[in-house]
Length: 105
Image (cartoon, one colour):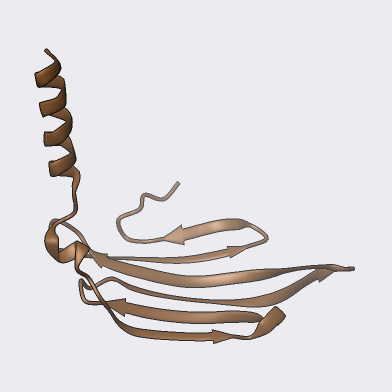
């Protein structure tokens, strides 16, 4: 019985491991601009076709209340070969993702 449990754990771990090309992915493009307390922006692309970009700006909401408003997107290629892209904004209304593959309420 012990052998079966150990075998099942080893098998599950092996199946859950990312493919070799995922583990060996490299960053092929990276940009970063730190604007201090006013915000930031960055973007990167990887060799396994993952892309991300994001920017934030300081927004004033009234007397002594300020916060960063973040906008961005990321994309990746799914196991089905389709490219999935998610655009998002995070502001006073919370995190709001939008994508063709995400159901709308």
